[in-house]
Each structure stands twice: as structure tokens, then as C-alpha cells.
Length: 334
Image (spheres, rainbow, N blue to C red):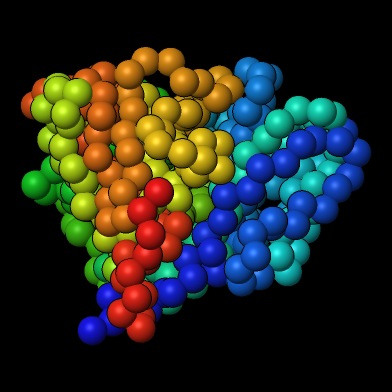
């Protein structure tokens, strides 16, 4: 029996490392799998604390970025100047192409098949619904106001609490989950719409917004939760695939958003991360480590980042390969 309809995850998601040249350069994805024209490109300076996380997408257009680690309004710079057929082109902006500096990029293709939709909308200040094109229920939503500096990023995760439609997280802060009917109007998203309350951070009248919506796809993506045990023999988290990229957030406490991928650390145990809510570079500090397995991850550290006893964690993960492809062939473990 087929396990997935996406045999090649790299057709919809890629991690790419590159070195800045301080000028203009075209970044071509260096894997040997399917070409992919990205619709969302997330860039981060790996070596210094000089640059924010910069997000560019095809809906807002080239050169327009939002910084994941702060409340800043949308900026314009010579960052991503084109979305190519198998990569993207950079201008001379230091935050995305400083000479000799190491960078990482996380790139997604907008596709209902892969469960990813980008929605731009204008706020009206009243509780409402917004249409999307996933043809499936969103499990993760990341939203940001574009023209105001006073509001945090907002995150909906379907495993955040037992009633996730009442709660929210903030991508640019360390805050634990919080409850507010003004965010999602205490209404769960559906296969055709997501709901907004009256919060200015999501629906300020006449302001513009961007929303990144993800729906879980078997063998390709997983948006789940688990409880830490505070032990070096940590929990096993079943994803249904070997992970290419994963972000963790402790929803019970004030902690960071930790992002790991298999390009910056190519072997187990995984211990190289970057924090989504800061401009800090790559780090390997602490004992927050895990192994990538053929069908999930096994936590090997007892650190607070991903394994505090009794605390709840949410995560979002994308596959390097399906555990079992559409022909019934299993993948290999790391």
C-alpha cells in the first residue's frame, strides 16, 4: 500500500547553503533531485549576529522581506531579486549576501499537493473568515502584519493545546502559549477558510497581512506535539519520514524556537541549531540533541530546549524522503 503521494520531497522543500559574495549571485539548488521554483525563501546569516531572519515570498514580490525575529514592518532591499526555476537570485544586501559570510536558506514551493498556501489579505477590524487554496484543513498557520511595527508574528498550531483555536504563539518571542479569542475568533480553520478575530496583529483595519498556511501530508510533513521526560533517553517522535528540517517550541514555558536541518549538520546526533526569534548565528550549545531515524527522531538529550520533564512541545517537520514511497519501497536511516 502506498505510504505517500510525494516520493520526492525536494520537489516542494529544499535547504540550501551558500556563501555571500557582496554583489549579485544566482543560487542554484545543489541537490540532484527535481528542480523547484521556490515561492517562500527564508534566509539566515549563519556566522554572525549582524542579520535578521529574512523571509521573501512570491505573493508579496521580490525585494520585499519580513524579519521573523522582530515586529518590524515589511522592508525593501536588494535581497531576493528573482525566484528562479531551480533556486533564487540575490542582490547586494548585506543581510542576505554579505561577502564571504555563510548563509542558510529554507525554501518552499506553494502547492496544494504539498499542503502549502500563501495568502495575502487586508484587515477590516471585524471578526471574519479568509479563504485559502489548500483544499485541506491547515495544521500550522504563521501570519504577520506588513505595514505596522507594533505587532508580533502570530502562530496557530493544531497541537498547541486541546483547543488550539483559542490559543496562539508568537514566532518572534520566547513566550509560552497564550489564550485570546481576538486571534482566531475561537474558531478552528476548515478546508476552505481560516478565521480571524479583532486583534490588530491579525486584522487591523486597512492594514495588509501575509499568511503562510501548511496542511500535514503523509510522508512529507508533520505538525505534532509531545511531552518531554527530562531524561537523556528521551521520547521517540514518529513523523513517518527521516527529517530534513524541524523546528521545536516549548509551549509550556518561556523558551526559544529552535530550528535544525540536515545541511548544517549532516550526521547524528543533531546538535546544530538557529533560533527563529533572534539574530544569533548557528550554535551547538547545550545538550539538546536528537537522532534522525528512518521514521522520526529520537531525543538523546535532557536539556530544556526540547526535553523538559512534563512540558509540552510542538514541532513542524519536513521530510528528506518518505519512510515508504508510493511503490512500497522503504528509505534508509541516517
